[in-house]
Length: 218
Image 1 (tube, helix red, strand yellow):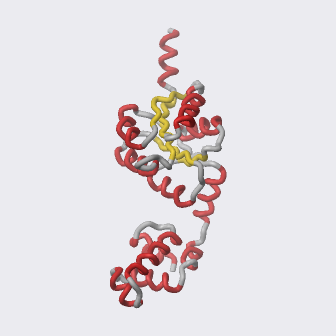
Image 2: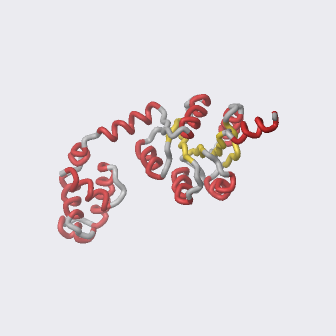
Image 3: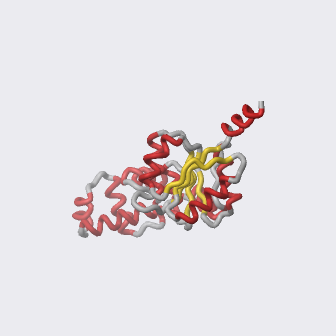
């Protein structure tokens, strides 16, 4: 009977994979998380390519990944694995709470976002929370997300310059970049620069998203 209970206990462990290019930190996380009775570290990787090749076969429940990896970054790794449907949840682990990275990671499929300065106990708790259907985030990250969702859309639109507004209006009318340049008597490169600024200020990534957001809130 005792072996049967042990097998059941092992089956109930949360299987974790760690993708972190800092070998020292990766080993430290493997050691600390491996001491938890309900967690099992099934793999550690120093880059996205090796992780992408091995993770489907390891069948982790939670993948803890750094964003800044050599070659393909952690966000691209999450996007790739999420598209494959490997059945894992993704927790981002990074040094900086950069706004763009936070939202890019969440859009890619991450369910949580932690800072490396968080204690190992907090990371272990976040892994358990993910398995229970939660979306754990470091305090500073959570504040950014809340602020983003409570932001009045008009504030984003009001942040556009007069020239950026003109470009956006032309885009909404279906004008091509070259046509925008001709209509405003500016260079094509200047139009592209304005569009980059528009995307950043409106927190969008495509022309369609920018126009949709404008039409929704104007």
